[in-house]
Length: 516
Image 1 (cartoon, helix red, strand yellow):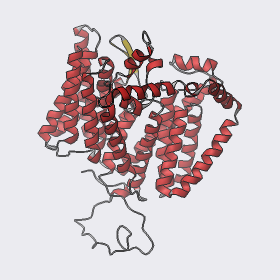
Image 2 (cartoon, rainbow, N blue to C red):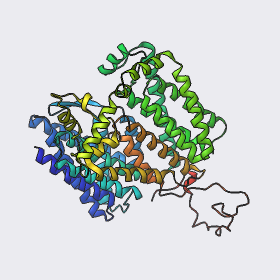
Image 3 (cartoon, rainbow, N blue to C red):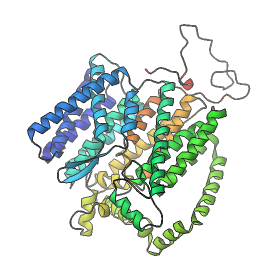
Image 4 (cartoon, one colour):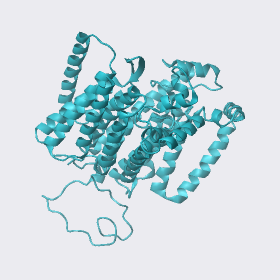
């Protein structure tokens, strides 16, 4: 079945690349067919032995749900965004072969509905294409190269899980987000949904912290039994994933604060939301989320206020670090770990990074193949049996370099730089700029978080943000008007003649523009 899965990964990634890059509707429709066929082949290769009747019943039920969802998505496009937001924390344990995986099954139902909706729109002659704009080429190249490396990976099953459970479905999700119509009110409601869910999850986390009871993750329960502090995971499986979600919500809210344009009680509300969400983040004790939030804040300040603000924030961060170290429980934890060496301080990550760099040095160009890090690491250290915690990489760039070589690392870097450049370059003070800043700093936070928690591509929020960046770059951003300016851009030059009634269209920075 490995050969079937490898062929499916190649076919599916080719279909996704066609959807990302092609322009004619018939060609893109063929891309959807390839994507669906390839994804189906990967799923068949990964499925455990299941009775044909049960498999057929599940397929029919899934098709019915997908058709109903597709009709709803065609009628209400923003249902895609809100359904995705609601499904983010919902992971269901599923037996994949001889191992158990926590998969986002409800979100996969949303993706299936999106695929049918997109196919229907293309059949009806929808001419939209290259929705991700400058992100389309690096993303298509990375997806294609990742699938190719499945051909030589030492762990085909893990490679197929990565391609079939994350890259192919979430790649289509990015396209779906980029195809959303530009509606300022709906985008604001989407931010409201993000903040509302973050606050709700923070309340659940507060309940866990007060009652000293966490849900369904035995490793967190064991950790809390021996640690000097108590971590919560809210409705998520892992406290780090919970912390990352809250960090993104905080940064998306800060975009409205640092760029201005929001005043009075609305500004006070933004500050209140930020403070309340931060309290929920605090009790996650997710160091990677704290660092991700701090870097996101610095980037937001640098983009909005310049270098002086960055220096002030760095000084403030140093003060905050000193205050944190003054807490006896945290200080004792750091001191105890430091006595055991760097590997202990980094919770075993330094050894994993060092070994990952050695794997990269031995396979510099093409890597060991996607999904192969664990097995190659175990082989080098002579680790017998299955011990994913000891052999799993925690750093996305190192994982990409070891598994996909310099080629994969270069494509990954190209994608990240292209996304951040598109989101953060030449921001103004209007609605589009606030949306772009929120998207950019959220991506920064997820990338920084992935340096200590290897889940950049496994997080559907990453792909949703990439799609929203593709949406936002289609619309102009208002630059701040300089004193005495008379032109539309505030550059001192005469502005264009006033448009006639037939020529007037809403500008994107008002949040009322239309999608193309």
